[in-house]
Length: 288
Image 1 (cartoon, rainbow, N blue to C red):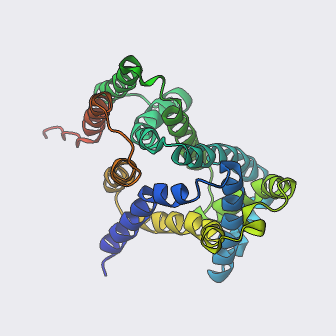
Image 2 (spheres, rainbow, N blue to C red; image 1 turned 180 degrees about the vertical axis):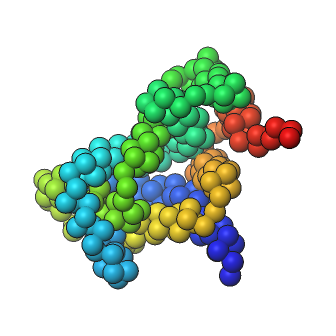
């Protein structure tokens, strides 16, 4: 199979996995979100380590721990991805999966703003207009009586910050995931011990225990697929494919989880989609 085609299939699989995560976390709604997060961190660390060893890339992990700059950067990215994971799990478990999908629609435009504020990258007029449209969509939700979509904004800013940090850290995707998770494992284990082991230890529900047990692979596998696809696709192609994730999240929230899609949502999402379309439209090449 051609590299571009195999990369497209891998990226598509990753985005579809992330898109249907709402179904998985909703099935764990009876488990406290911090406990699900703790199991996801521990399981993700174990699975990422096994993958790195199987690929013969354990040296990448040693190099990351030996480099203070890389380790410091991964400590920061670990914090923001834990915030992102935790809020997403909480949102799905509390009937706010639709708002969570809004956050991932906003995320690309938040990344543009962060690049401008932190990296000094200039915004084109079209990018600026796209950000304004997204902002108007958020304002419309507030005006429509839905309140400030703080879950969506938290997810967008945390994931945007995560992308910004990882952009500046030279480390492989799976090695980086392991180091991030490993840095969080002591806190996760401490929480689980404080909870007496949590549901995974004390529950008689085999289905629930099995769902928690696969949290690690479900965290790491889409990331590995995404990394594989990212190396084989053009950035523009990958950027457009990223919208598959929040689109599937939105469909799952409405048609599977039964959340209400109001007129205010339609207008807000419409403004954000227009902003994304404006942002993603190919640049016109200057005439020679």
